[in-house]
Image (cartoon, rainbow, N blue to C red; front, side, top):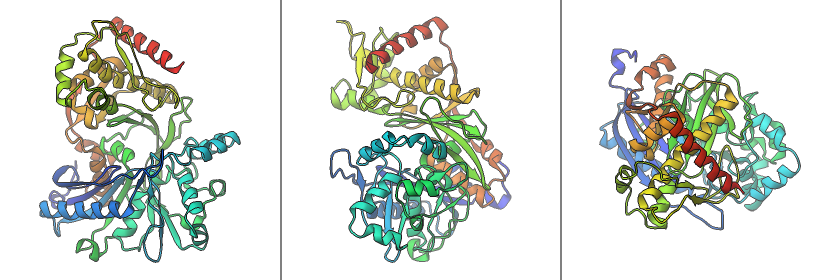
Length: 499
């Protein structure tokens, strides 16, 4: 990392606004954590399949954690820039005059517009939408959420058409509030998750705006991930700070893992699993229902990515603990794994909410195969942990098949990456080197890296790469015949699940 001498003590504030909590971290030279703060906030479920947040909760917890982190890091007057990363697709619309939201934030998980999407699919328009956006017609993305708010909040559509309302994903809402309404901006990664942004022309698309009945006057200006997003108003934090980066959380993690070469990928293991592979300067259309998306945009140049989602990773462990009481706590997992020298042909397919990529079967349901009178708790725990690795393998196969790229290594993060048994099994099943970084706060560090790039802490992305450091590496050690046996059992279990 080639830093000028006066940059070694430079601090960057990273705002990491997530689905269940808001966090703020202060980084020194964009890579060492000086201070952090976290505040959870309430989830609202007004109807079956609906998920909402109170925008004021998002704002209060973001502001509160920023003040807390700045104070605990003794960082007043020392922060050179702010970077923002956020839960993607979550949709807010607010009044430009008052800054007040017209409705709660509709969260990415929300399914209220599923029927609207199904109707559009039946009209045969999905292929055209996918060609422009790289996405599927799904209520996951922002466009149908915007449409719902405009059609269901009295007077909202009329105000939107008159240019009195603003739409934003969470990053844009925070930038508006932080700048006291002076800046209505988003970045290319968040724009690419709305179903309204053409990832080839790099612009909001008139055909898509007509399809989803979204007035152009609602939309923010789209900037690079490292760019000038204005400055915080003095009334907000007590002093002005330049906002110099924004990126959606999974793309920020791609940057945080320094995946800057085509074929590099990161895999985040939380409740589910999000995998993103850098595919370079050309978008790759997926034959496996992976998403084609913008990985990052720097200096007006797009780097594209393929993204796949596993719906259930950590939830399998939660189910063993909270659902059927096999585990008292996650600290017991390692003991169970050590007691199981083989999987005894027991497989868990965790299709609790259907199967994600590459199957995309929402009607699939979970099952366990291979049960005998000898099956015990350790077999079930091992089957749950193994299932995460098998699903990852399916995703890797799909990505390599779509891209034709070679995979040198997989960089992992998220809560489940603390389990080294899992990471070793992952290396064995995927026949890939698995690398765990020293800094596992990859979304937050990605936002800090981008802000650091914009203010000159880093000369280039290759400088960021030299700053990324491995904590642990796992290499494939499994014999081919054993791997084939495991994978054969998994594939048979999935086939039964899909019937």
